[in-house]
Length: 540
Image (tube, rainbow, N blue to C red; front, side, top):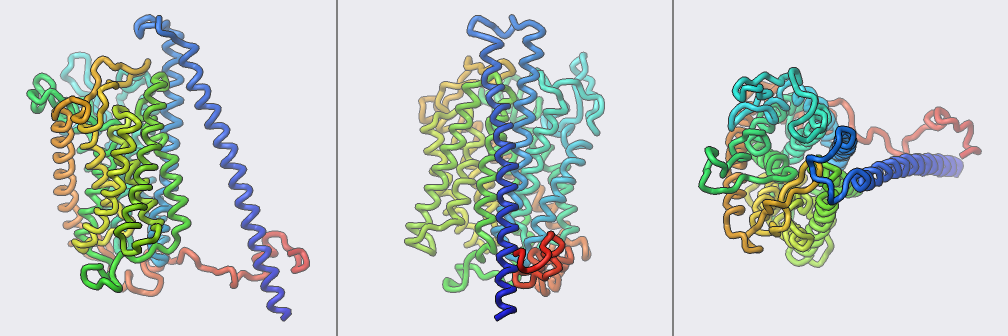
């Protein structure tokens, strides 16, 4: 009885410590949210103080221009920090959907990718993606003669500001670094549980340093052939439309999702994985080890998306655009989560039940889909395309399963398929009301109009060409890279040795030497409590 009482007291103490930690965390989070709110209030109010309808863009004084550039820079940096915060969401989402034996590996891969991406995007990635060069790759700044290009590698020889935005180039770099980090993190989700850590190092170098920035240049570079498509002298000039991707449904999410597909195909399924088409009773995706962590991670990602999409305006002056993008982002996520929940309720293996995992991936799919068209669609269009994304998620998971591809977190469906759908949806749902955003506000002189609003097939054609081109290129190049890496000798081979995957503790112990939960509450010793200031059981 005495032992039982002591054990009960110890557990009570642990729970109390946990409550105190939660309270401290909540206090810190509240403080950060208040600070963020004050920054947003300042950004919303300052534009009204700086200009009016009588102010044309060319009538701003030097002082007013400096203030506008400052506010835009603060807005861009706040958005960059929100996007970077999505890494916490990715870590939690992937870890929650993974099995316990591969959780430490998930955490380590995400952290390592973040560190590696920063160094590579500084050294070569930014120059490849946002430098001038040709239609396929950039490398630097265009000289005054319009021909000479000075390289930007290691961020050398860069101008003070990025293009005509007035934003310091380094502020733009950190914003785009957060995007690049997001793409590299997506890929690890479909390769959980059987990728060696050294193999992860190699493929991460390939994707972050070369595949993402070079192919991304096609759509976002100053002279990328898809960005200039439809212009005089450009690719498919007769089309009259460029490829558009406001915040990255294709550039970030489709690239990440398709690279995930290539990696999962080359690796093959995890040992012991049974597919539903082979055994209806025992088959299907193994349950994640902690859906609480996955759900919290999903909400953190949703919160970070308010930097991802509204921040892509790069302008706090475009108040209407920021508000519209934020509202559209919210509505698409809501519709996607609701639609995926209903699809699982009606047709899923747990028919008649409300499935948490599908609902989480549903609102993430809605967020991915709205990322491309968020600036040019109405709230109703956002709801409709987000709802479709929810059903795309449900169908995509089972299509991937039918092909015996092991995707533990649904990365291919969420980022790949919904990225493609969101990119195409612009050609359907662009409302014909909105044009472009700029440093001093919106420019609606050339609005984008989709098929459903009387705009014909022009925009849809451009979107389909851009999406297909990038999807095909990423799959071919990434599949080839993954195939070669999987032929390397151990320990650099892409797939971990069989005894490393199947052994006690799985990848966590084999590659990292530790389990994610090395001690249980029942095993907590008195010495552990004494270290926290508990002198005796009477204090518990």
